[in-house]
Image 1 (spheres, rainbow, N blue to C red):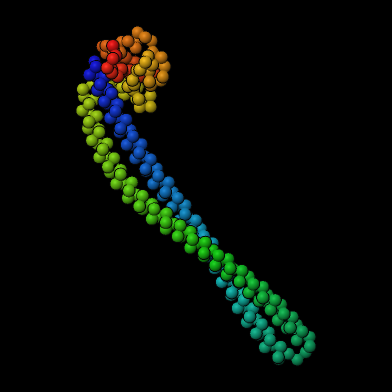
Image 2: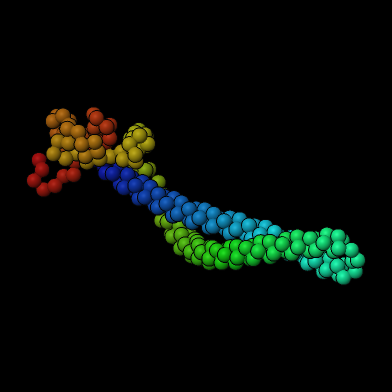
Length: 239
């Protein structure tokens, strides 16, 4: 029975090592996923800003078209003024020219405003693209390191699985089943040390008779509180 208990201890050691490797792998994959999400968000923001810039350029182009139209209207109206014969007609055209000049000035101001906004937006996009490139470079570098580490972990897990299978073969089916159920219920810890009358799995006091029975190891003993399998680490001086 002592050998079965030792095999269970060894099996748990292997399982905990495998658990640790898998958790590390999951953590690294989660980190990469977070970086990918950050890069995707940055890329989306750049696309949105470029869309804003395109819309701004379209607005500026429309204003420039209107400005060209008003400039042509002014030229035509001023040409007509030279051909008019009555004061009334001259005043009407002069009013048209004045209105067109005012609109032309407003259009020029709006175009300048759009230019300023476009310059600021272009600078913002440049900065965002620089940040995006840095994120992409970091992601590519991190992916390479993560994949290399995952390859190592997969190899280690495969080796540990082989050792686990060999170890499990030496354990009676009933004991192995009990161990598996306890691991599922107790966060992966099925076998724990008992020390100074306490279970180190749940830190509860053990009945003296049960604790003393652990020295004999005639059967697998479970903690009456957490149900984990108990063992004593025998050291010199123990009776």
